[in-house]
Length: 296
View: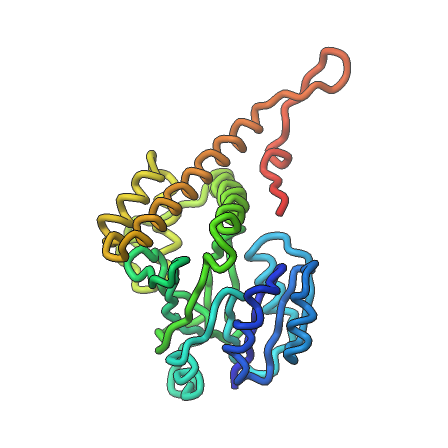
């Protein structure tokens, strides 16, 4: 009834436990970005089907996978290598009866865990993710932290998807978010160039969590002092302090990540006005296309 899709890039550390949590499925697909560690060997040894494609950006990569991977079943559960299907989610999946609901995609509640095992219940910003869906009814937009756009109604699903973002340590988390900041900055410039508009009404009142989050993020990027606003939002409004020192530390890391995005966006704006010498004393201005290319 359900196929599983796992995205990987050098995930030899986290993949075994991830695969173990979906061992109930006879159609597991590992969608790999040409790992140079033992990721592919581990996947193959576990009986998973491996598809490889060079990563360009998140939405393009995910859209290609949903279109080109030959899933055995009509429904796909999409997870990352640092995520696990909990016992509660496993039970809900085993009792899944899609014929009783018109939804084409389901929101699953994700639990993010800190380095010390603390569930970041209050500090976690986006708890719901559309991770169970019919692949022909799903597409993604944005270069990073893509927005899920289902072609049809959605519903909530029982059970937790457990996430361990610090499984490889703080250094890896920071390095990864530096890369995310590059793509977030490029997305911000793309929105500006394209005149993308965001609705305050939808950001506040939309019943669709994904749509509401999309407009909230677009409006948030227009605000000054975003790193401080984000920290205050997480610590005070979302009461991250109730998660203890882990919640406060995670809120600070998220604020630093927001500052990475601010700095990278400024750099891209600056690159647009840099003049490059050609020959002799003549100068040309770097094109917008050159200024916004980001390598991943």
